[in-house]
Length: 67
Image (cartoon, rainbow, N blue to C red):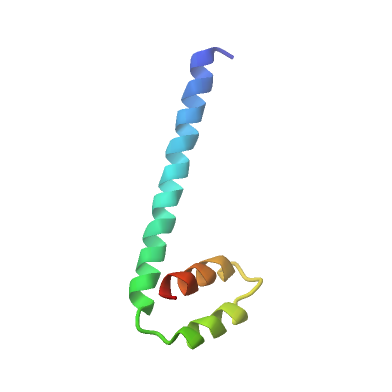
């Protein structure tokens, strides 16, 4: 494989990675704005309920941002 092709593949992966990061950041900002003002105890209960689900990490991140 030519050296140039390898470099193009790395750039492509970076673009995809930064797009995913931007999407995640946007989603977290939206979650924060929708949940501001919620009691921390309520959000903590949601963290416990969503443990071992696909939303577990996002719920934990929301709790951290609200704290």
